[in-house]
Length: 128
Image 1: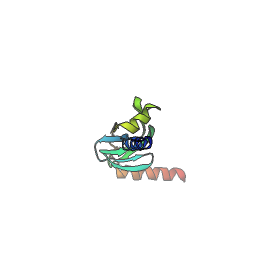
Image 2: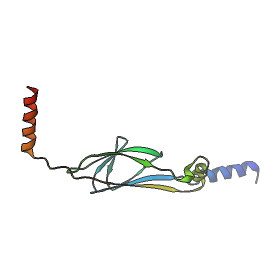
Image 3: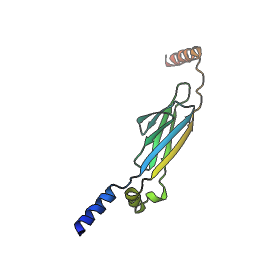
Image 4: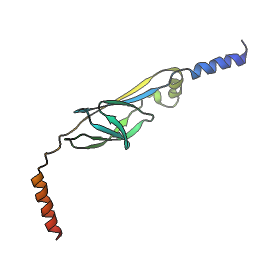
């Protein structure tokens, strides 16, 4: 086997290697909350979404009868995703990084229609 053929085989083997799969599993209590990550709607809990970068994500969740949740959550990199080992992980493994985030939603206070109208009339009087 000549050198060119060996290099071609080695290159194909490297390219056919694994790649790191990164996912975030998001759950909530109660389930069924609509989730936005960085202002992009991604679905309802429970769900699993792929991600490409580590760092802080803006998380927004909404569900009827519950207070809207706006928070931040960090996707933390494992040690082997540091520069250097990350190249080897991308080429030679089929690693899977799984982040798991759980959120507890608070029940929204009950809204009394009469109280809302009364408060609106009070504010209207203050403007006059």
